[in-house]
Length: 362
Ligand SMILES: Nc1ncnc2c1ncn2[C@@H]1O[C@H](COP(=O)(O)OP(=O)(O)OP(=O)(O)O)[C@@H](O)[C@H]1O
Ligand SMILES: [Mg+2]
Image (cartoon, helix red, strand yellow):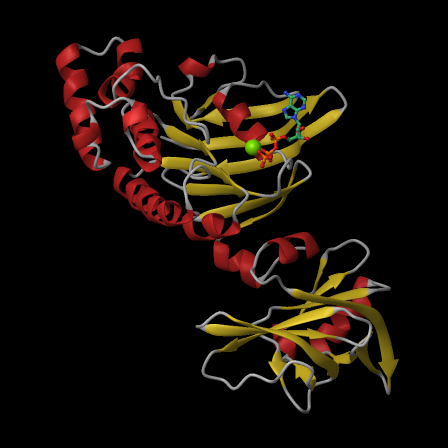
C-alpha cells in the first residue's frame, strides 16, 4: 500500500515556518502534485515524507505505519531530485544497480531488474555509458531508473524535469505520466510549473507560504479556485481580476469597477451581501471575456499578441488596468487603439472578497 498521509504537520527552521499545519492524504497509486511558487514549502513537504527532515509537529504515515522517527532508508520511498546526482565514474548500469547492491539483492536478480527497468525507460543502449557520455534526458531517465528499480511504496519527485530543455521536458512529462500509470505506483511530485502540475496530477495541491490553499482535480481547481491566490496562480494568461465596490441601484447589486459596473445574477448578489465583503474582486478568465458592443466594460485595445492558433487582445481600462481577451485565430481581431466594450456571461464570473481573498458563493 503506497498511501502517504500527513496530519497537521508543521516544520519550523528557527524563525521560519516552512510548512504550516498541513493535512494531506495521498491515495495508493495516486499521482499528486504539490504546486506553488518558489519558497512556499514544497520541497520541505517532500523531505519530511522522505525523512530527511523531521516535523516540528504532526504525524506522517506511509502505508499504514506512522514513520515519524523512522530512518529515511527504512521508509521505502524513493526520491528523485532536480539535480539527479548520478555517480560520474559509474556506468548507467552500475548507477541503476547501486540501490539494489545496498539492499544486498543477489547478483542475478540485480542484473535482471536493471535490464527490465532499462527496457521500460529505453535505456538499454546506454547502459554501459558513463553520465558524461549521455544526453540530459538520458541522465534524467537513469536517475528515474535508479529510483524505480527499488520498487518503493512511493516516489517523491522534486522538480525532476527542470534541467531539461523545453522539448525534452514535454516529452519526458508524457513518459512519466505513462510510466506512473503502468507501474501503478504512488507519486508525490513537486513543481512550480502550472502546466506540469495540471497535466500530470490526478490531484493538485496548491501551496503558498507553507499552507495548502486548495486540493483538487486540475479542472476543479481551474473552474472553482478557492481563493484569489489560486485564481491568479493557475491559468495562462492569468485570470483577469477587477476590484470594485458592491453598489446597489434599484435594489440590484453590481460591482462598480474603473471600467464600468459589472452586473451579477440574483444568487451572486445574495452571496456578496451575505459575505459582507466591502470590496469585491471579480475574476474572469481570458477565454470567457468577450468583445461585446453591449458589454458593461469600456476599454481600449493596447496590444494584439498573435500566437497563430489564437490572439491575445490586451486591453486597458480607463485607469490603466489590463484585461486580456483570448480570441480564436478564426475570429476577426480588433486593431490596436480601438475603443471596445467587454462583457462576460455572469455565470463565468468568479467573485472573491478582495480583503481576505476568499471565494464568494459557489
Ligand atoms: N534547512 C533550512 N533552514 C532554514 N530555512 C529553510 C531550510 N529549508 C528551507 N527553508 C526555508 O523554508 C521555506 C520553504 O522552503 P522550500 O525549499 O520547501 O521551498 P520550495 O517551495 O521547495 O521552493 P523552490 O520552488 O524554490 O524549490 C523557505 O523560506 C526556505 O528558505
Ligand atoms: Mg524546492
